[in-house]
Amino acid sequence: MNSNNYTTSGSGHVVKKAFVATSILVASGTTFAGSGGSPASTISFESQKNTTSIAMIINSNKDINNDVSRQLNFIKDTFSLSDEELSKACGVASRKTLSNWKEKGEIARDSSRQRTFKLFLLSKDWQDQNFPKDKSSLTKLILDDQSVFSMLQENSLDSQKVLFAGRRLLRQSLKTNSTELL
Image 1 (cartoon, rainbow, N blue to C red):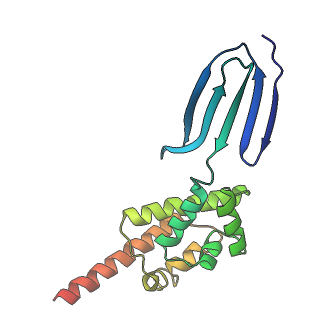
Image 2 (image 1 turned 120 degrees about the vertical axis):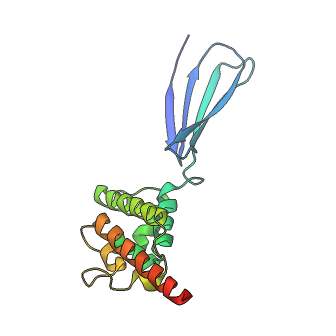
Image 3 (image 1 turned 45 degrees about the vertical axis):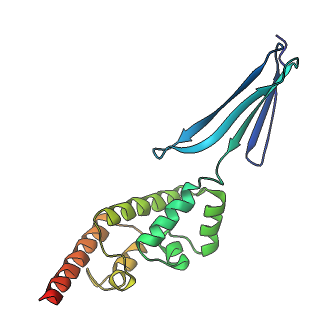
């Protein structure tokens, strides 16, 4: 078999071409990334009868499934943050940086990626515990003269401290609700 391979890429597509014997081939499949089972890319092969080439096209589905954008929105909704407040919690200087992350579907710096992931995990824990999500609770001084909102913006994010504050907020809201019922 004579193989003369070349690869080109651009705009999320990679094309590889190789010369093969004459055949009929049509196949396609989808690869999956992460535990959510979301499509990461679509791979398709196609060959026409009596041709001597096969094209393989891999299409990235970043536009369809942007995990960075989904995670940032989840953090934002969990803690009732504005875009500016979210950028401060993520440790970046501007909303433009967040916009770029969402658009590109990636966070370039390791430290920013780690902090955002830590915030995402904290958000999941916060929601799993049904801690208050309203802005007034999250800006209330609750622990060591700090609010949950101010804890989220600290240089060193202490998830356990934030969750402890969440438990305290929940207990206070339960006391308030039971007093109102009497």
